Length: 231
Image 1 (cartoon, rainbow, N blue to C red):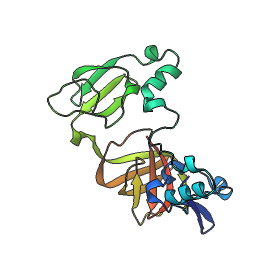
Image 2: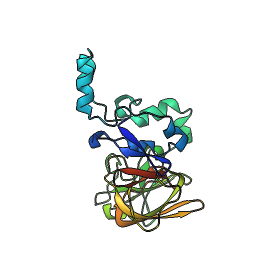
Image 3: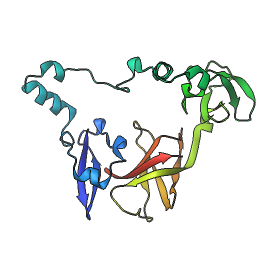
């Protein structure tokens, strides 16, 4: 992984890799102090180009020219819907068709099973509402997918559970942190309030597609402070 391990005030924490375009700290927020104390990331101080050059110099010419994978490595053709259908028993019975609703609660169409959709999705919905429609919410209990306009995707807060702190054992309250809610996302400044059950995250600028189940990872410059799961 392209990440670096640092130590300060008796605590281990991750720092973004030298090759920012390949930085993978977002996926590693759950590593504990014990994990970090016994882990090495030899690629963290290198760029991808340097790694390719080392591979070529050691006789791995074909490997050094291998195309990069941009998607989930174990999903053929990046078709996760087909993967779910083939790997979950009685998939169509467990996740049947249901209603598309607009944000006013009106039924506007039928979906093909809520796992086939993601917050922020626009393409492949199969409904015409007279305006560009996006998935703005999913209600698994009622088997409903809610559609809305682009501006209805934005929110300014979320609650983060299953929190793991790295750089600090308790979050400082006198400063905002940069919070990323997706991998390919630069992040937004937010105030974080630590509570017994998790962290209240208040974004200083509204952000789109806040998705329950996704990771929210907070940074101080290039240092990974901690992370958790959006509730």
